[in-house]
Image 1 (tube, helix red, strand yellow):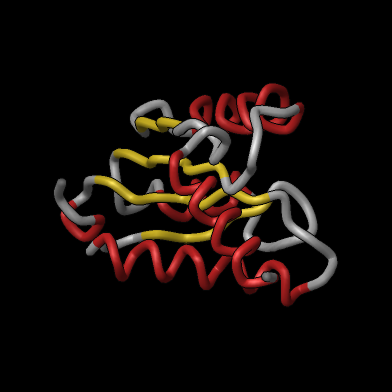
Image 2 (cartoon, rainbow, N blue to C red):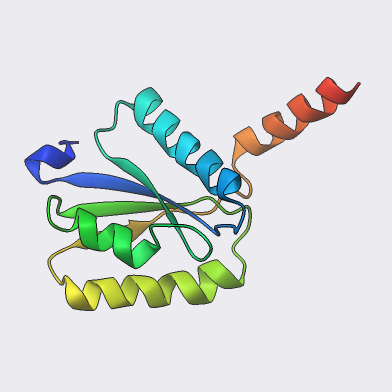
Length: 126
């Protein structure tokens, strides 16, 4: 995987967003930690609503320097936002930037680490 400076892949942690800015900041912290732990050059947070940048804005900015974006939904399940809103937003950006490859990963649901996180929280309450 080449880094974004060489015109390759960037990652977007896509979250719902909130009117509570500290909630949006928490997503930004997760994105920064993903970059650090993964040795990834470019990882940004983007939001459906309530936070900035929105997904089209983030993808627009990234499209100037990279050729591929992987959108990682920070959603637990494949609900309405991921089934309806995300594909619509992706289509808008692809229309404006036909040379940009955009891939979307699965949501967090059924990832093995989710059970570990729930067990950790349950044990912490014991």
